[in-house]
Image (cartoon, rainbow, N blue to C red; front, side, top):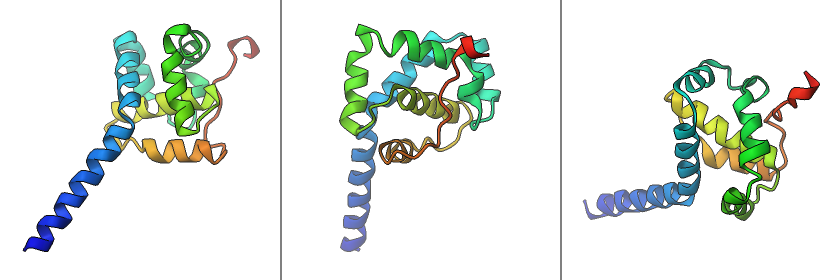
Length: 132
């Protein structure tokens, strides 16, 4: 019985540490959610995850205007500390996580960060509106 308690305690500590590691991403997601209209949140929710960054103009706006602003410097530094250096990947991680949250799917933050760090192109970069 004592071993079972220790196992559960270890699992709890591990899960707690994992959630804390990405707490800043959760805060960024909340800020993005608060800044979006309910109409835009509905549009994002209904898009396919595979094409949403090409189809959702707010992610482009976020990358080009908010993520690069002086106010987001600590957000960029946080991503850099995880090994994510590309602003397209940062934006795509954030909006993929938000999309999954809106659709009640597992967020998979650790896997998204890992794929970005490994240089795997799983994200389609947000399209440049001038090229449409």
